[in-house]
Length: 402
Image (cartoon, rainbow, N blue to C red; front, side):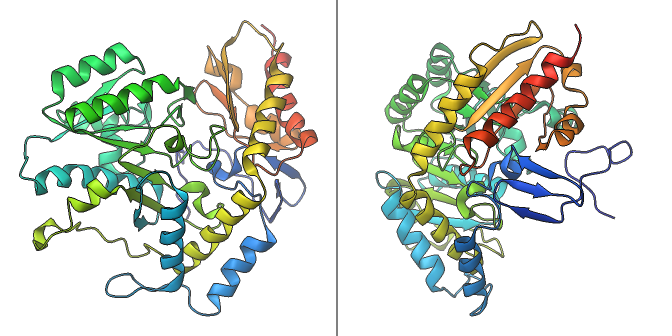
């Protein structure tokens, strides 16, 4: 029996069974659905893309996977080189893993051990944001602030090693002033907080964070698992403000296979690079640097570059703003739009009850959560398809009587 994610198995409704997928569409036996959430924000090129499929199948004819322990291969070498060339500043050192949660764990481990290797054993604390989501593993849950994981607080109590602050510069400055001697890192989802409520904030907060991290010697981590590859309207937020450690996942492979990477700058890498064996980064996922994943990632990056995806994303934002410009309802708390993301936050989650089935009946797959109705569409979506997604979102709210 399948144990499904984020579901109470006793009461969950039957999931939609997909028999095919092509472009922006998911196909059941009797329906064709526009995927408005890109399979948890990963399938940016759409489904069954011929060039991505070819990259996977061509590599599979040689080998699918070899461990990176004592071995290497051309796809992982090429992907590491490409990322080092493609990413900003000196974010040059790639540590691969098989999921975003694990990649964030690696980043947090890097930050702590960086100071331990220097003999500074007092920097055990992490600064993070309220409403943050960084993954489902234990340390990522600890630095996150997702109400779905508050059972951890019941079991272990509030963490003494994590401080959560709002996205306000005054709170940021106060946290650094009071805790900088104990902080090893500040971790953020830059500009757009995903699973914590699609919350958006201004770049000035990150600029100030970079200044404070420089001043107090704290490492800045950008978790761009969700925001990377254009979702905010920027290629990476790291292009605007440079972190010390960058985490990428989801869209890295175009949604073809699980893979992620934790990319460190020269300063962080040099904190591990010496003759002391105990200073090595002791982490090694079995499927890190998987050859299939690296091959399809290279092709995904090539498509992103050569087909001017940033202009596609800006067009998605333009259409979204146009279609929702005059949409108002007193049950709506706020409509937020950034790049390839739109979120309608309602006051009462009961307003969204039944929306997934309603969307299904209107030819759209959606997955609202809590008070949030959102879309993160594939970048290849047409204007007609996007308008259909947005109209479906508007129709549900409009059809419910006050």
